[in-house]
Image 1: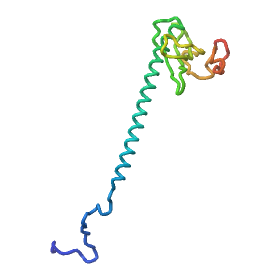
Image 2: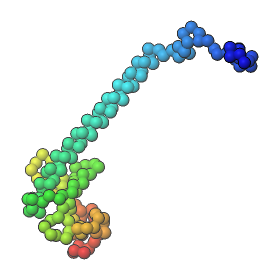
Image 3: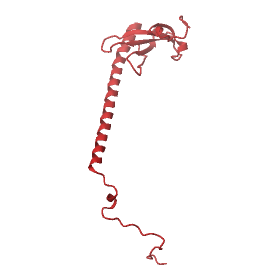
Image 4: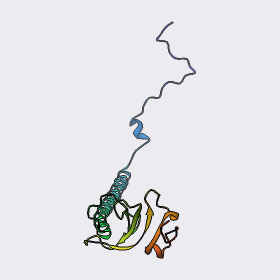
Length: 161
């Protein structure tokens, strides 16, 4: 067989690139480049603003957490208390802070703290008690006071369950 034989007539020959090649079909103009550049700049600015807002929110939550720990220790009169759980809200500045009120206690005290974080102690707006090993659910909460009582957050009887 001859390897230099021409292809059969049924197979078309490859098209030769004309003058300009692919550019003949796709000619991005200066206006398109300007629009793409503006869109990229706007997207970059939006991402930058979102990062700055997120960092500022996180720093604010950290400052509140420090003051919340100090307030909880002062409220329960235990200066060396270490295990304190703080749950910042998705919106607003009223944090829920839970911890043992006394050493060896079989319950946790959860407090709602609000007010400015630039002061030494935040305002305790309300709270409730929870059994030590139970999850924070409506049916296990008891002894509500303050805003927790006003919002009906306790499901257990007023006395200890």
